[in-house]
Image (tube, rainbow, N blue to C red; front, side, top):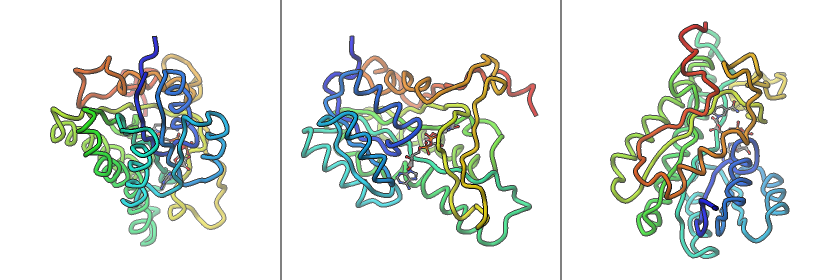
Length: 261
Ligand SMILES: NC(=O)c1ccc[n+]([C@@H]2O[C@H](COP(=O)([O-])OP(=O)(O)OC[C@H]3O[C@@H](n4cnc5c(N)ncnc54)[C@H](O)[C@@H]3O)[C@@H](O)[C@H]2O)c1
């Protein structure tokens, strides 16, 4: 059985990492079409080449309302409707400690991380709302273990706590028409990048690898594909009585956190 038959999806940060794994899995689950949104054009071209007509692409910035509106309009003009919005694009904070932040990091760095990780989700939801009411659809946000626990820098941690709060607030506001839920992955090796404003000019831009087998109690190397099934459940009608919920796709980080420093 395919769980997403006839669904039309708009997903941000679709070109790489967890977003890309979700797109690939949604295609397997029978979606009618996906509007894939990313800020890097080549990543979108690769998606299009892999999946053809079932993918429509928008190259834009999640912080822009017109860019998000373009994506919703494309879903309707190409695929006839919108059933699911997945807010997923995110940036990291360079694990910058408060004591190491100068004015630029405090002002620009904070705005850049919150702009993508929180405002981006809110604007995407605002752009999608009317179409999701028509389809009685749903929203899924990519949260994080950092929505619950400390481990990254304070800006990223605060942004992911805020995204959790936004998910809950929207679940309350948009009921009973639109369900809103989240998936909270643990550290996963992707190209996950830091906001430029939080990096030193000569910093190594190679993304930090995370999610190794020693980082979780299941002793697993978590991969982006490991999280995709949680999105399938929340995007499908199988979860029709779930709203305001989080699936912790974290290889046991939640139960082990008390013993960690
Ligand atoms: N990788 C992890 O360890 C991890 C753990 C928990 C949660 N997350 C969350 O997962 C989500 C995806 O991260 P990932 O690890 O797959 O990273 P990734 O860098 O592999 O993918 C993110 C995608 O978002 C795109 N993007 C970045 N800024 C954008 C913007 N302003 N507008 C449009 N697109 C933009 C990037 O080009 C990239 O393709 C994020 O919300 C992140 O917070 C990641």
